[in-house]
Image: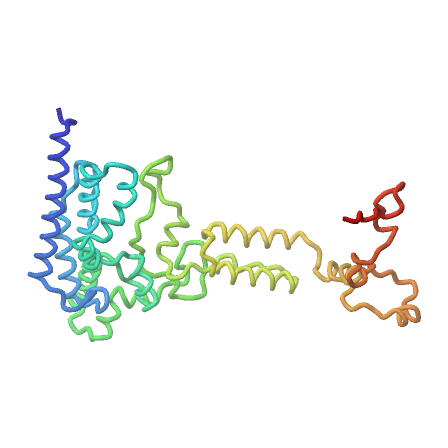
Amino acid sequence: EEFKDEWREKSILEDYWKAEKYHELHQRLRKDLPEREQLAAERTDRVADVLRSAFCKEYADQHRPVLTHELADYENPYMLKRSAMERLLHERCVRNQLDERVMPRLLDQHPELVKLRRQAALPPETLEPLAAFRGDVRWHFDARERLEQKLQGVDQVLQVIVANENANVDQLRAALPEKRAENPPENQLEGVRHPWRNHLGFESAVPRGVAGGTKFGQPEPELATQLAKMRYPTLQRVAHTLPKDPKYRAHVVRSIRVLERSKDWDFQSKLDAINRMKEIYDTMKDSQEYMSGLDEKLVVNRVPSHIKRKYAKDVQYVKHYPKMWYKNKSFFRYRPSLTATAPLGKKKK
C-alpha cells in the first residue's frame, strides 16, 4: 500500500513542505540574529561573531529535516529545496527524454533557487586557503569548532591566573594556544623533519573518505591525515640524500620543484617518483662518462673538412645527410624496377 501512487504523491509533498520550512527557519535566523557584516566570523574572528555563527548553525542543525521520499540530507537549504523540486518535477512533469534533459536548466533558472544559491554559505574549499594564506595555524571552518577552540584558550588563561595571581600580560599571552602554535617543536610530524616552523596549520574541514565500497569504515592513511594539516604540501621530506653527481642532483631538484606545483599528481605518486629517481641515479655511472661518449658520437660542432684532413685524419664522425637530400635522385637510394629501366611515357589526350 505504501508504494501506491497516492502515497508517493504524499511523500513528495511532505518533502517539499520540509524544504520550505527549513528555508523559513534560515530566514528567521538571519532576521532575528543579523550578521554584523558579510562573513564576519571568518574575516574578523571576533568572539561575538563566532558565537552568533555557531549558535545559528547549531540551532539550524537541530531542526534540519531529512527528505524521506528519496533519502537526502543537506545542510544547505538551497540543495534541500532543489532536491525536493527535482523529485516533484521528475515524478509529475517529465514525459520524455527531452523534458528530462531540460529539467536541470529549468531548476537553475528558477527565481527562488537563484536567490537561495546566492545566499548559500561558502564551502570550506573557498575559505580555508585564504585563512592559511593569512597565517592562521589555529582555526576551523566550522564556527562551533572555532568557538570551542576559543573557550579552551580562555580556560587555559584562567588556569594561569588562578595559579599565579601576579601574572602579567605577557605571561597570559604566552598561555594562549595560538601563541604556542606559532612556535611549534622541530619535529612537527613524527619521522619527518621540516626546516620551517609554520609548515603545519589547522585541520581541514573538507569532506574526505568514501561512502561505500571496500575502503568504507577503514582508518584513514597516515599520509592523508598529515596532508589535512599541512598549509602547503611540499616535498621537503624527500629532498635529502640527493645524488652526489652535480648533473643528477640538479635534475632531482628540478623535478621536486616541478612536482610541488603539479596539480594532476597525488602526493603519494610524487613521493614515489622522486624516491625512484634517486635510486636509479645512485646505480648509474657518473654523468661525465656518459657525456664523453655522447660527445664522441654526437658531435655538436662539426670540424670543417680541410681542418679534419690536416689535424684529425683518422677520426670518424657521424655521417650527416646534405640539405634536402631526399630530393636528390640516385640509383643507390631507390630503384623502382629491375626490368623497366625506362620511365613510363605519358599518354597524350
